[in-house]
Image (cartoon, rainbow, N blue to C red; front, side):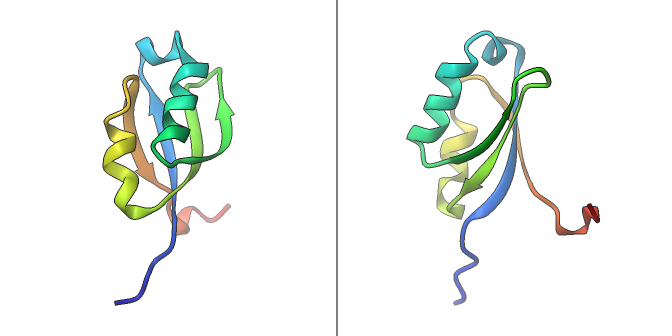
Length: 75
């Protein structure tokens, strides 16, 4: 099986998470997210994670959603 490598993800933060964003980012790092960018005003964190770590990111208190970065966005 081919190893896909780390996944690029966008993590959306919920309202409660916005109030504790520095701690939430630390929690994301603790579960293996290599944080690239924290967009504080819109509640989004970008980064990369091993596919096996996605469930850990979803379980972090304050995470509303996690989306895989799409290659077809065309930016």
